[in-house]
Length: 176
Image (cartoon, rainbow, N blue to C red; front, side, top):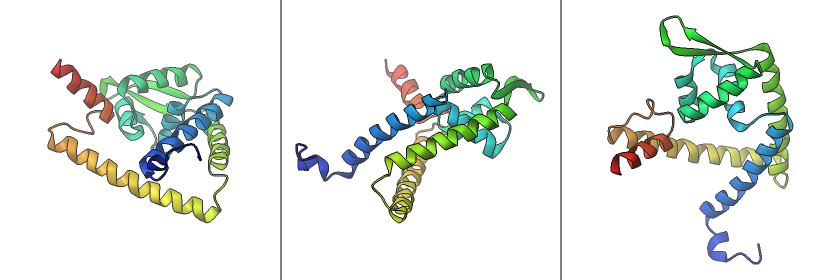
């Protein structure tokens, strides 16, 4: 970092962005080694933790745009990692269930992601890793709650959109 201006290297926002680039690359490579993508991991993890869900629920829980949820579920369904069936209470809605093969894939993804965490956080002690995770969780929670409040005040429902980006895209379309 000796060639990087101190104006940048002293800013947590710049440092977080740079580390995020490395984290994303490492995670993408790790998931790729087991034939998956990050969206697959999000959906499988949500189904494992919360059980059967609609596609809209998965979008909210995983902070994914609806179209990305549909594409990822299509891919997971083709590989028989999830099963998509019509909701008996509302035929317009699909229910998504984790299969035994999906559970096995989630375990493979967990192992791959554990290796990514080790590579990313290699220079940190176990205590420093726990501290970093606690601080990042605190930041994420703060900003996530603020984003929810902003969208509610603006008359938008965070829960009705699968992500902030979909609201931003809708608003951009309204202005043009």
